[in-house]
Image (cartoon, rainbow, N blue to C red):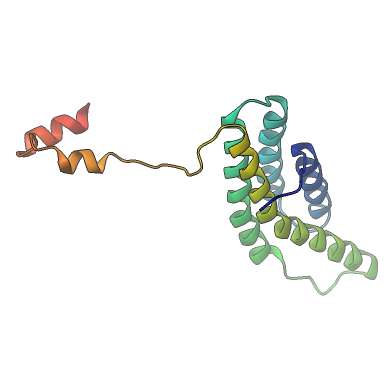
Length: 152
């Protein structure tokens, strides 16, 4: 599947703009801190074009902010009844931009993952805990050997 060539700068700029607009009326400072800190990692990924770690950290950060954005929206979404018409419109615009940012984040994750692969990252993330080597070693018959192995 051929994906369009979207620049990392465009992804950071779009998410920055949607985060700024989303923070205008109703979201708490924790939403802004979380999203802007991840975007700072995105700037690092832009600055170091050959860094695999920067792109991976940006990818993980965007994925984590998907979950935190859902939590923020669930907690802070209810509209107070006493708002004037102008404040109500500002709330609707801010909520719409924050939700649009959340909807675009999975697409951004896919594109950033493609960039991670292009920079030489593995196709899959390997969380090997060495359990196969622990269970397959025949010299670890007693508990002392297992304890000594874990202390290394």
